[in-house]
Length: 111
Image (tube, rainbow, N blue to C red; front, side):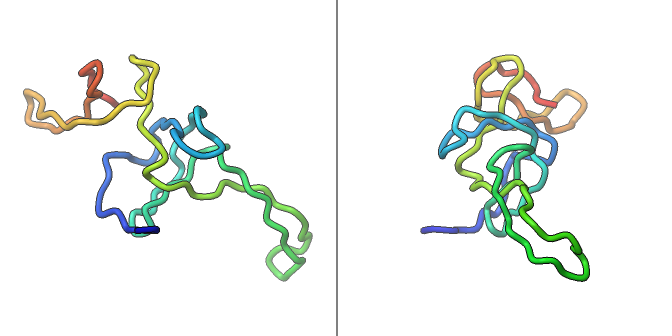
């Protein structure tokens, strides 16, 4: 199904992700925003689109604005700094009772 909503994800705002599909494949950046109802996220300085705007009360200048467009959650993976690769994420309960995200490849805790 196209545009199916995602109920939850292990990604958070501020995480470094790598794009694994589409025209920006292989590039990585920081997550700026997550929209779980649409199953999309925005990555800093990636998937840039040009928006043509008319002059208005709010935007007196008008012109062509460049901004990041949302990407599908299925097209990104969390980037592990230790492995230097995109990885799957697991959850592990630490000794002090906290839950932490871990890299499935190197088993290191992801901050």
